[in-house]
Length: 169
View 1: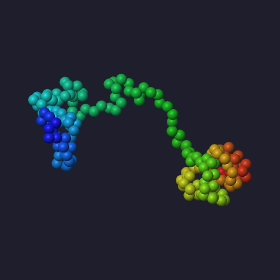
View 2 (view 1 turned 135 degrees about the vertical axis):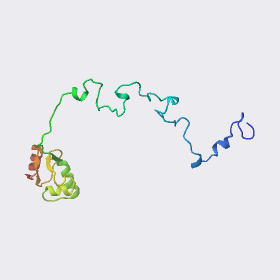
View 3 (view 1 turned 135 degrees about the horizontal axis):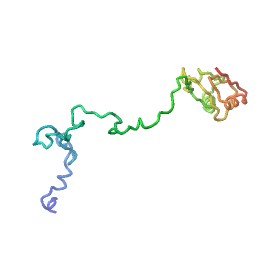
View 4 (view 1 turned 90 degrees about the vertical axis):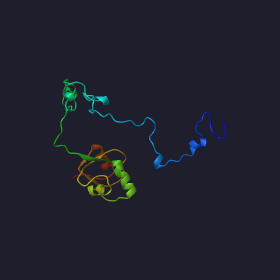
């Protein structure tokens, strides 16, 4: 090493590390970019003639697109599998709320009096147009009546046992 330069004519360390990055000297990494394949531009390009599509056939024609799920004439998967189930048009969906959730609401927000749908909506447990079903998970200590669209047996028993009422709307 002589005068801070590497032997054999390579750049010095100071020259390598003192380059600053500017917009005028940015360039992509070696091998990260390549020119696109330009098909149908004559024989000299190497992609002329059949333009990489082979000879004849449906896939060589203009406007070709394959149907989704097409398996070359074999019976497609969505037709091999059997149909199952149905959608019940009369289904009623309920917002399920557990007793322990309502109990924590009573404890934290100091709610006194009856629990109605309005109280549940105000506290974000249900939305205005939802049907509400009370489920019986957790401990129930509050002596309040709850008004809802449906109750499970365990929820109704727990509410009555604590001295409250389960009012079905």
